[in-house]
Every structure is written in structure tokens, then in C-alpha cells.
Length: 347
Image (tube, rainbow, N blue to C red; front, top):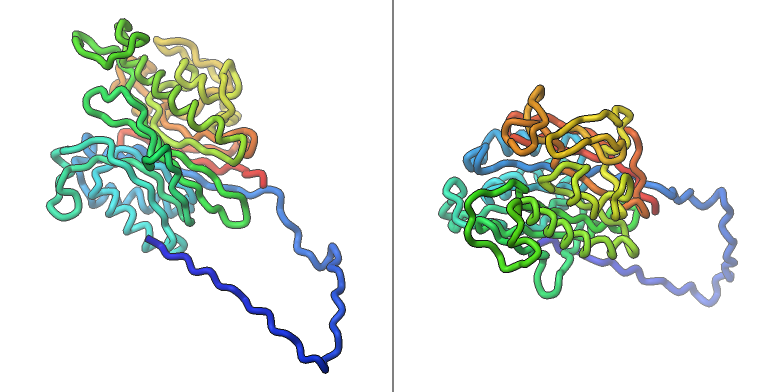
């Protein structure tokens, strides 16, 4: 826990015999200009710490730290990490120049993961996700908890939303939120399901869980944008043009107030035909983030196709997304690519 020290300056009284000082108003030339905009660098990464990396705290962690550092990321969202991996990454990153004031908000999303156990660091086998920020960040509370439970705990996965108010230097604070919604696959031969009449009769309720969780997130963070800048980072497990993302996108039929950092890339629009529909709107596209180059767009075969499912969404009231605001980085240590966004924050 970082301790902030506040220094108070005492004003010395001049001697009575001293001549009276006369204040001279500062001119425009004397006053340094106050920029109206500031660039903010964000990075989102599904680390795939268990299934892909088997709990390894070595090379996968070192590679992720180097990529975060090389991008000079100020706000970092991370999904799917053993807590041992989280601690290793946090400590390595904090040792890098400029990251000494690193702040974390981390939540547990699953328990007793075999590859994650460590008798000292992670005895309960926690699987986690969370927010790292280069600067001081105040935890956002949802009622009396430091996260929002998204519900629908299918397969004992506890999907959550965690947020922090990041004190961006020379700018207003940014409310940065990280999440990871459920995989929206049609599930077969399930006999039990959460008691929700809107979902229970849906044969493809895997997709419905994703939709319901997206709605919970949007209802929580959309009103926040009226008061301060808001960013949402994470693996949303759904293609940009599908209904779950309607809650976030402002354009192309969306009902939200957000834009994605890669949505204005001049390579879009291209028309991509998925078996679930047509990806054609330029403002709801982006570079694929999971899969492998050359794979088909058969989305219902998630490990045999490529698609964009990892996002950095920023509200359009406070941020500007430019044609060059978003890009992805390859890594050999995950089945996801790293998403980077460099957006303009209006002060």
C-alpha cells in the first residue's frame, strides 16, 4: 500500500519595516499554456495463464512485462492469470523505470486451479483478473464490495467488473474498468441453469449469458460517463457486430456511448462473413485478437478460427479515437494478442 504525503507550505510574514509588496497580475506570456488534451496509453491482455501457460511464472511473465514497458502503458487490464503469475508480473513491472508507483486492483474469478497452486503465494489456487495503473488509483466500490459480480456463475466462473479511478498526471482522473464475460458457445445437454426465465429456455444460453453480463456492465458504467472519463478493457468473448456489443458501441446500430480504440483504422471497412452474420460496419470492426493468421471465421469453432474478442472501449464524451489509436501485438505465450490503445483525453 502506497502512502501519500501531503506537504503544507507555511507563509512567512514580512517584517513591518519592509516595503509593501504590490501584486502584479500575470500576463498571458507569463502563464504557461494549459493543454486541452492529453494522450493516454492503455493495454489489454488475456494472459491465458492456466490452459495455455500451465501456471508458468517465467518466460510468459517476462514477455508480458517487457511488452507493457515497451508500450509505456499507463492503464493495464489483465485477464486469466494465476495469482502467482499476477504477483510475478506486478513485481517485475514495478521494478521498471517509471513504474515505481504501480497500483493494483485484483479480483479472484476462480478457485482451486491445479496449475496455480503455490504454498506461499497462492495456496488456494486463485485465478484472477484486474487493473494495473502506472499512477495512483482509488478503488471503486459497488455497494460494499470492490467489484461488481456479473452473475450467472456457469462452470463456477465468477465473472466480475473491477474499476479504479486512475490519477492521470496533468489531467482529470480516468475511471478504468476491467472485465471478462462468459464464453458465448451453444451448450449441449445441460439440465441445470440459473433461475432466470429470460435465459433458461434458450437452447443457446451460453450466448445469452454473455449478453446478460454485457448488459449488467453497461448499466453500471454508462451513467458514470456523465461525470468522468470511463474506459472498459477486457475479453468480452463476442464479435464486435453481435448484440452483446450493442450495449457499448455508440455507432453502427449500437445503443452505447463508447468507441473501440481500433474502430477508426483506415483498413476498415472490409466485409467479413462469419457464420453468425456480416461484419461490415467500419466503426464496429478491429484487428483480430484471438486465433491464428489464416484461420477461417467460423466463430462457433473458437479454437479453429480468428476473431476480435478483446477490447479497449472509451467513452466518446471524454475521449477521441483517431485512425491510428489502436493496434495489436503478437506474443507466443497466449492464444490472445495484446491490444494497445493510445487515445486523446479531453481535459
